Image (tube, rainbow, N blue to C red; front, side, top):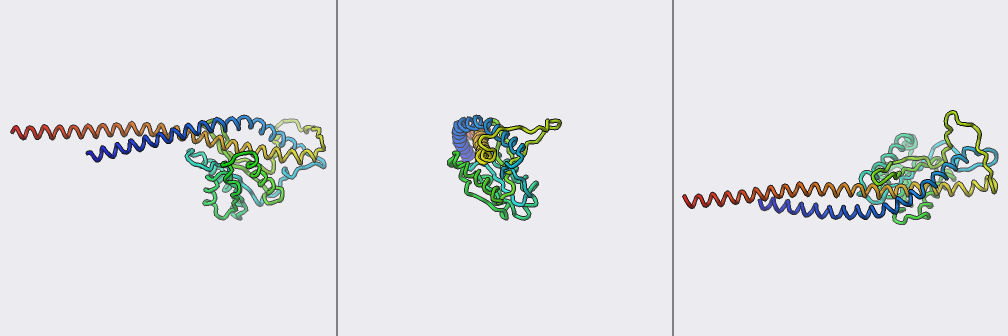
Length: 297
C-alpha cells in the first residue's frame, strides 16, 4: 500500500510541475499575443483596402497599360506558400493550415501533383516539414522557413519577392498562399487564397458595367510598375502577420486548456491518494485490533 501511495504522490508532484510550465507558457503567449494582435489589427484595414484597389485597377485596365502580375495563363507549374509557426504546443493550429494546403494540392492541383509540377515554399517549419514527408516527389524551397525567428518587413518581403519573381519569369504560373487568419485569441481560421495572378474583381449581378475612370500621375504604366509590387508585398505581409498573431492566440488557448486539465487531474489524484491512505490506515487499525484481541484471548 505504501508503494501505491508513493506512486500517487509522485504523479501529483509531476502534474503540478507540468501545470506550472503550462501556466507560464500561457502568460508568455498572452504577452506576445498583445503585440502581434496590435500589429495585424492596425495593418489589416490598410492591406485590405490596398488589395481591393489593386484588384479594381487591374480589372479596369485597357489600352497600352498592363501588368505582368495580372496576366492569367495556362496553369502548368504551381507554387504554394504555406505559412505556419516554427514551434508547436498550439493545438490544431498548424495541422488545420496544413490540411487546407493538402486539400488544394489534392483537389484543385491534382493534375500538377501527378506530374510533380508543384513547388512548396515554406514560411515556418511545422507545415513545411509535414508536406516534405507527405509529398517527397514535389519541389521544395526552404530559404524562408526561419522567417519567424527574425520577423520584419525585409524578411517578409524576401519571401514575397521570391514568389513574385518566380511568377514574372514563368517559373510559376499560379501562386497560392495557405495561412491562418486571426479573429481573436480563441478563433483562427485556415485560409488558402490566390496570390498571383492578382484575381480580378467579381462584378455583382445587376451592377453597373461602367469602368472606373482613374486619373494616373505619372503615366499609368509607370505608376503600375511601382505601385503593384508594393501592394503585393503589403498583402503578403498581412498573411504572415495574421499567422503570427494566430499562433500566439492558439498557443495561449491550448496552454490555458492544459492548465485547467492539470487542475482537474490533480483533484482526481488527490482523491485517489486520500482513499488509498484511508484504506492503509483502516487496514493498520484492523491489524492492531485483531492483534490485541488475539493477545486477550
